[in-house]
Image (cartoon, rainbow, N blue to C red; front, side):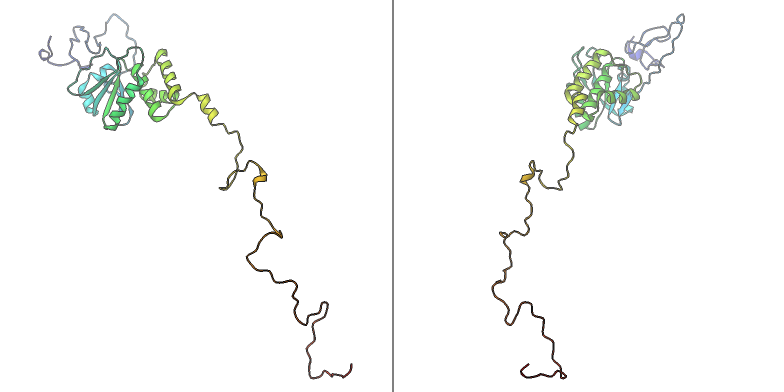
Length: 260
């Protein structure tokens, strides 16, 4: 049945399928539960993608990517599709970029597209089929590359904002290899921070490897020159006798006796 022949979309998933008749949604796989099967509690999935970085980076599933009106409400204009087999539904409304490898995550290609989105100040949705493993791994790689965060820190950041994140061991190994490439090993980082020499206080003076290189000020050195001329030591004052006491002043009461 064509879309225009259906009056209203499904009230639960928002897509056009015969929910009451048990028809499976061709977009998100939603269908009416079987009454004979005991219902198992499931985590509620929001129709809105998860905001990873404010007003820029969003993470979600193919179901989130299929809700064009919801994406427009959040101001999202670009979509990074990490699953090659997923169709890009609204090429006339959004700018798409699709990763081409099914098994190996192309982190560099994805980061290049996200960098362009950030440069253009465009909000972007990164999605895979369920929004649990592939697309979160791409977002984590972006955080490591652009924020300089370690893998554990980036993973925790995404997990807190999208609790359903559950990265497969294969993709996690690829993230570990990517972390090693861009940030190096944690052991290497700690070794680089190790200080072998004790701190020195040079106060701006160059460090001397040998104490004999230091220039020590010279005092009482006969060869040292002076800017002041030295007086001649051989010229003595006139009328000066070594060891003589200074003369006493004469007064009127003093009697000068001749011949004595």
